[in-house]
Amino acid sequence: MNEKARRHIAVEGCIGAGKTTLARGLAGALQGSALIEESGKHPFIHDFYTAPDAFALETEITFVLLHYHQMVRELPKLSGIVVSDFALERDFVFARLNLRVPQEEALFRQIYSFAKARTSAIDTLIYLRAPIDFLAQRISKRGREYESRITRGYLVSLNAALERFFVEEYNGPKVIVDAPELDEAKNPQYVKSVLRRLPPYSRAES
Image 1: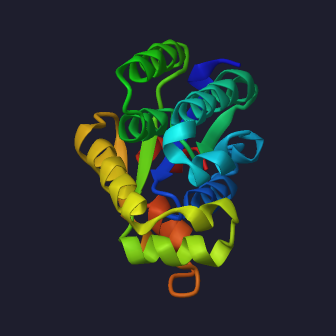
Image 2: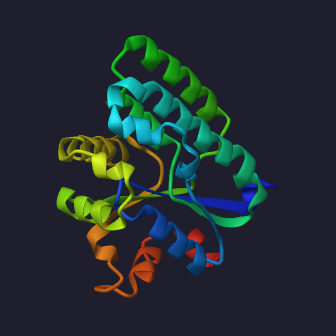
């Protein structure tokens, strides 16, 4: 598939921010395709939240390879506008937070650099900024067993790390959205409100 015929919008944010819901909503509104993270295929995610230090390396390497696989195997099959609920850069942020052994950090960076060099750049990134209480409530409400082990301290650290990277360090085209504003009960037109903030090429192709 010709990359010039495809526009890739990625939705990022902390756990529980509403990435998947917004990605699906935008893809539908733009008559595009949604590329959804396959976290259910991750073999170490349950172990990580039980013993983070023991399974950090396996977890971070597996996530970057899962995302890489989707970016190089599934994304090229799609044309028009594609909206994903992840960006490869999130793996860099998680690894920077969770890996503490220099040799493990070096191994991850080698794999991440390989993957990053072989995937196309995102056209527009949407970052969902969210307060901790909002994230904690959403995580509790969706009831994933392994997420019940996420401590508030870890959530605070992760949210801060993601915001620091995507708001301050990420230098690609981006739109920052307050996640609580995307509550369909309070704002039924939340998808349209985000669409109005996207670059003209995205809206023109809808």
